[in-house]
Length: 272
Image 1 (spheres, rainbow, N blue to C red):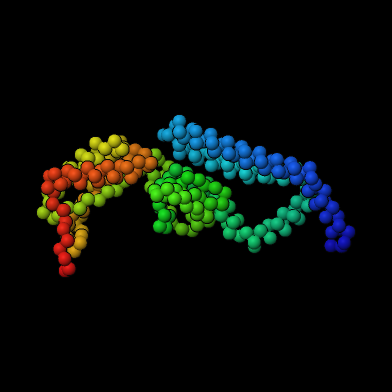
Image 2: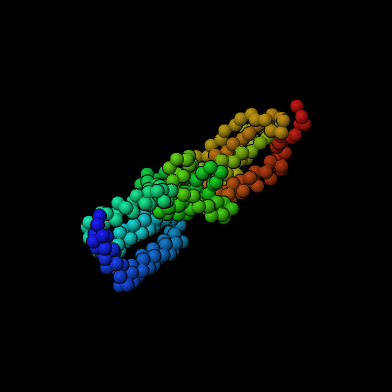
């Protein structure tokens, strides 16, 4: 490439990035951001009005955000700058190589974000476990997934982590979710009576989703160096937002009735 070619390319760049074009790019970016903010506010309003449909609303708003940012950015660059085809090919190749080295982690997260959107291992609103973090997916962005824990902490995780690591979804896009609660009783306790008490408490809880079955698993386990019975109750909560309220309601009422009925609980037996 001779000096005349370099000067010509610089002239093309300067001509594209004039004050008018920069102003249009700034305004276009502001419009995209404003529209996306409006979409998010509208989705929050719809979720308040239609709580049973909030997962669908969140998923649609996430898809709209993806489309706005990706399509809007491409439209702005092509429509405002109107670069020559040769320049676009040359600049695109150079930028791709530079970004590939400098922003490989970011690019990996962007690609992973698109994969998450279409492969859908989880959805916005799902309760998921990822490594040692458990909570609700509040947003799936271009680069990161944001998860709110039950302690109200907002955890930001790069999208690329979800492609290689194991993630478990508790409700897989559904409003209801199974909640597992363990109760421990002594070996000489009346298991049938304890079973009936737990079941009665669950089916009378205002948080229970009774269109799905209440199931139990009984097992002998070692508790504080002594054998005992673990009564594991598996029931569904009607809304994932009530997960801990449901579990707390069941545990408190079952414990109270166990004490009233004198259901023996495992006690510490000392070293064995």
